[in-house]
Image (cartoon, rainbow, N blue to C red; front, top):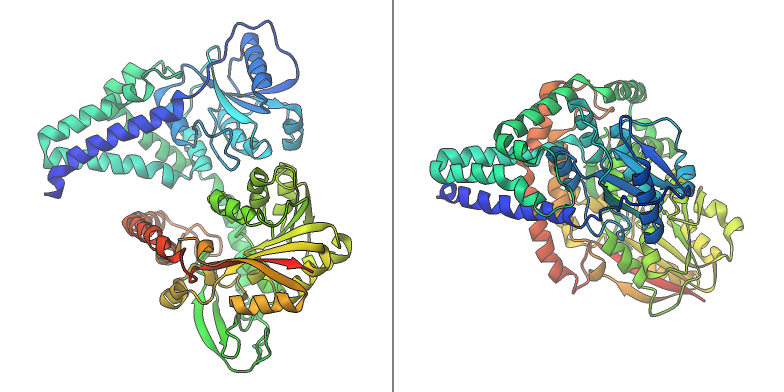
Length: 600
């Protein structure tokens, strides 16, 4: 019975997706090529083989100046169907300009770039290939997050993309797995439709072929191969994907880098992981109590690095902490390739996914003050500061972090100034400079939380505010999901403090808690992340350089197969989380809490 409805569902999905893709392209402005000549204020980056006439340069400069743009990606009007559809799927949309954390690959032909942005990106003089040019749009958007846009350039010639270039571009933009999975699902659905209901199945095939006409009807992008592509789509699409995957198999660029990392990790792991731990302590680091017992025994479910970890709970004050805790060498080992290196792309995606959360954090100050200077401690790459400017456009936002990400945040302009180092060690330099300090999911990572709070009290000006958000160790999900509750995040989270403990510690340091968000701070992701962590543990990415053996083709296939099979579970968990959040946000049992405290 289900298969009987599949052709109808498939046809509806094809139509809806066609309208969605059409909306991603239909808003694009078209440059007026009737201009006198270039103004010379901007620099142009044209890919190898791109034809960029002077009249197109002039039109682009005129449009950029009138719209106040620093970066403009130029899209050829006659761009081919396959490449244009990739562009529509890559994050393009009418809100791209105004969305600070939006990310989209470019058309890969030519860009107009403001001199300041070009200097910060250190653009060379040589013409890049089309893959590099497409990726440049993503990078430049971060440097000009509210001044980067797209426009159709009628005079710009089309560059033909090879299968190898397409594979490399898709891998850089979305990861090839995410790029390939939707068409594979579509092909599987179409084949099943024909087998289950031949007549309706043929209708679904016909609609699949005609879908490009729906996407490009009235569009400013008018592919030269539209009719040919539609007529041959049943053969052409699968063949193109096959060539793309074959090219990927032949060009294993990443393999050499992973091999080097694998050798380095193997040398470290040969010495064992026990050396990464300090001796177990017998008392609670928060209250000094000795009534300790194991709370959660766990492993690294995020990166799957080897090692076993124990979180203990103090029966006297409820504080949960890592015991034995990692030493400095251990912290270096387990943090490495999580937020940078091999994990940089995943971290960037994760931190860009929560703009609503960033705004809610910033808005917590609205009833109390108008910040002049704000220091975000543990600021990472500056995602919060970037979004918070929408709430507080006149505020100077600085950031502090131990990693190199904070220097990248300063280069992007997401923070006005970035400080790299340990917060307590920079107190003398920063004392009295700030009227707001924020610590979002930072305190649980620190070795000595009391020292961090002491530093905040010294750096804040009189009457200043300290805004803290941390996981809630009292969450019911934490008890239910145990090892698979994401906020335990071993081995990075070293301290998990109950809300009452943190309030008391702030009061002892001269702070008054003026506002609290408990249920409203919940991030509605407990079940989704638990399923994701379980799949990640089961699949074990074979390309991770700390895996004991080099990856083989069948291990890669197994890894992708497990993740694909888990998609329905992830969808079900996500829906359940969203429904549960409607109840949780009205109570006090969320997976996190926020405190706003004022220094006397």
